[in-house]
Image 1 (spheres, one colour):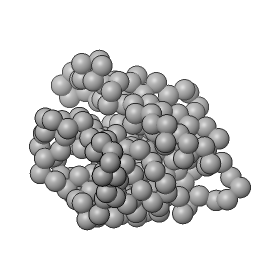
Image 2: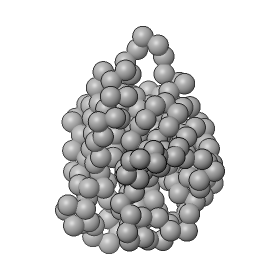
Image 3: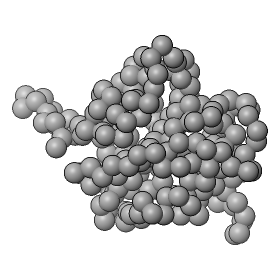
Length: 210
């Protein structure tokens, strides 16, 4: 259940428990700092949270970048990899231990998801963790929810509100083919209808050697 906002304050976005984030943090070693790639919008609370774990935090609001470009698509039959790589604009050789994809997959077509994941292959450290959220609801906001990390067990959901769209309702059994190079590590179905999935990077034949 979400935390309740103060009766004297303006309504605040709901805060929900996050079993997936908690599982991710459990994998982190003490006295070690990590490189983190956040594919959502920057939030000061999240930046503060990662300051205790990360030596480097890179924020790339992927959906916003794609939206600002007018949601371009490649020619029919062509891969999205060159397009998505350009939107990510990650530095050559830059590698990450943790990748926060949040709810982006719910806003991509099924054939686009593996291409986005392939853009990350050359930027994954050995054993990198990928955190993904998927909605089980029939309808979702027309634009992705922004997630603010409150603590290792709670996320605040900043929904755009207003217009809604159909949710693709991706099933866990489909995820293996949608995230090439990654293996499911942990999965949670939360009471408010959100799925949280944690994947670990195992590498693929087409990934550049590290």
